[in-house]
Length: 243
Length: 390
Ligand SMILES: Nc1ncnc2c1ncn2[C@@H]1O[C@H](COP(=O)(O)OP(=O)(O)OP(=O)(O)O)[C@@H](O)[C@H]1O
Ligand SMILES: [Mg+2]
Image (cartoon, rainbow over all chains, first blue to last red; front, side):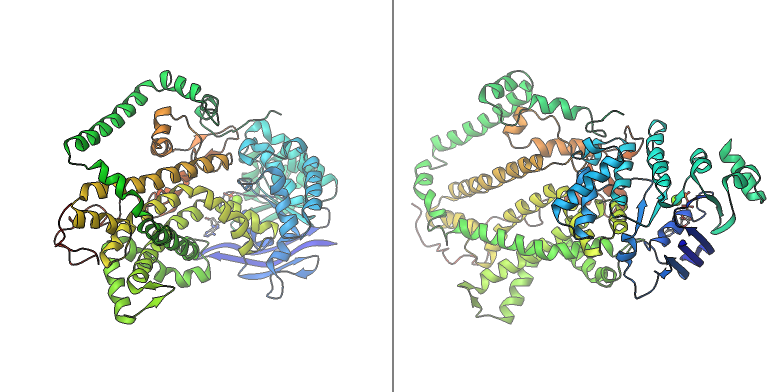
């Protein structure tokens, strides 16, 4: 079953045509990795998917519900799509626990006690149970990113979007975040991951998209994309990042 | 994996926290005076002694009449609920709170009416609000006061509501309109200093726009602007002396009367100076204390080492902040991220107006260069020049 279906997506910022007709399907439980040069529109694609920005043209379906329509509240859509950012974006004034609880209380309407135990459970899942009372500034980058993942997971999303989740991390912390993501994939989470961690993509991805200038150049299994890419552009890009 | 307490903070933060316990005993303060900050404390002590000695000398030679001061002391605040001290405080507090309520939405408009992620409603009001803020900040309060006064007098010469006459209302209105302009800019700076990434993350979780404001932008913004908001209160309190010009009976008029009626201008102005100090210094100390108690790691200014002398003078944090402003530059943290070493450091790059959250940097126009009372058109009901000096 298709979890995310995107058809004919276009988005411009002023005169800059960033997304130029994107068609995309992600099946339930699949992990899709998106690679591509800087400025090609990868982040814009993810941000359209959870309606942080609205596309100019085209349709987005989550479980066959068209979400970019006037009848659908964007908050309802975003609640079902977890997003993890390159810069973590934890709420500075809240502890790890409260970061995770905020959405549970304010969006899901849970009472404080239930939200707390749910949040503790999610922090436990990412291995940060004992850090629940720490403020973001007291955590390492890797720990912050895992709290961010817990914050997204707590909302029980149908899809998780990751926008270069390890690019801002020191090398020593990358693996702990990737491990959490791998486990998530094994548990059957549907994921769209913008990443240049080729090891992760090879091991976890069901398919990989090479994205360039607002369009999908090519889609295939990790072997197809990395070992025998069909397009010259893909070959050149893969050659550059695998070196 | 290791933990990094307070990563992203300058190293001096922790050490000084040990040196300065929460409630220092007199013994430890004395030790601090003797050891850590001896030169500064000595200097402070000398300055205070010189001032006291100067005042004592003036009293001794008869320039200051100490007996008169002691006799007149209570009349500044008795009766408590209508005396000049009360009027000064009431005008300040009322206009500050009214201004606060209006300035929050205006600050929002200013913060979100421009830029990539501008909001449609904020955009609608952006031009008029910006015009208002510029008008208030660009003209002397003294002029604003007279403008408001004449407009109110024209519109409702016999205004008398809640027992306050038209002069009082005009003064309150002028102060409120003025502080709105300044506070709006403080709020704008605070709101803009809250990272856009966090706003986006909150939306991604499913919070609505108002929820994002209530739970992310406002709590963080307020913590970042406690200092400029306090500064604004103090500036407003001092500016409230200016409404004496439109016959509002507050501290300044009271002191002026002492001079005119009894020939004791120095005593009067010394006494009200003390009143202003007695309120402003504890207030800023209390805010600094609260700020420290409620401080969140990674948000706002860092606790720094401050000497006993500066604490004693109530200047510690301001002095330190100026210092930390000057080297507020991004530092490399363990996470490899570039973070500001001070919560405000992000602001200068975001706002077009420069270091906005520092608030009012200069005294209000008209604050300092007010001419001596002589020759001023009948400002006070009680100025009866015929009375002999005592
Ligand atoms: N809100 C915005 N307003 C104007 N231009 C934007 C906005 N967001 C993105 N852009 C522009 O759109 C283009 C694509 O941006 P996007 O962030 O999607 O690229 P990306 O593929 O994620 O790149 P990177 O690998 O650097 O993150 C860039 O040129 C960017 O400057
Ligand atoms: Mg990007």
